[in-house]
Image 1 (cartoon, rainbow, N blue to C red):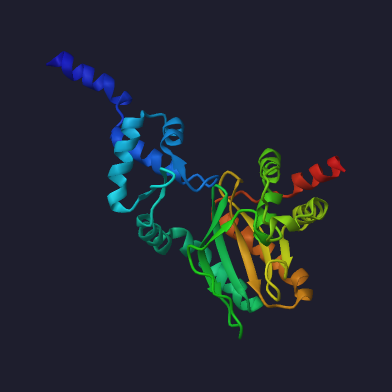
Image 2: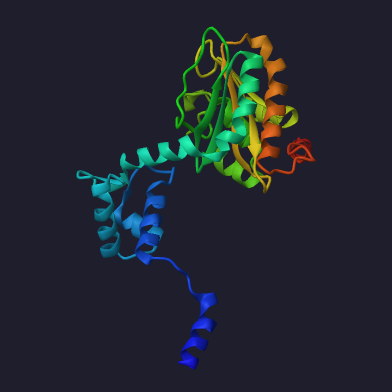
Length: 281
């Protein structure tokens, strides 16, 4: 008995209280949530998760009745199901981050009479998790949970501009980029100039580029590790000439949110990137 107890004590540090099947099911869902694709075949899932086909097949069939996974009979591929929507909505409705950012969004929205949004990054998507509509006569309705591509419009420029160089190059090498809406409208030279300006000023802008009459400003939000976790977006029908006035307000508010999120903002995060631009020039 003593030896058994001693063995138990010795083995405690190596014991991991996890259920392998649940762990694998979670990995399958994360695999299907990969933003680089909408669907995945059984073979692709097995290769990415590292499990046998029989195990993957069993897990997928277990998840499907809950609506967590869907199967396309024609292509025999799998995708995330609508059953996850209610769960994600519940998370968005109760996230502590909303309590943190709401006062900042409210103040900015009222000062500019525009709509202030806060989006969190997930892979190559940006999800709106908090918003405040100012007291403007004409407002924009963007629902919580709305998803944007990470390169879309003003927020795309703000996020990509402040990415580490390796990540930025990887994003910019992709075939489809949505900085100006239609990927065919992309002008690499103009984009490079806008990203450089964003790193100097701390904010980016889209003046009627995605939708006529609708202007947007954005600035990155950093987390404790000084990595981008999302961004602040100000959007509305404000005159184009106000973009340069509201822009610094957006950058300042994003900086305050970053500090509230635990980021060390003693040094402006774009200072080193500005030096990088000068070196490249």
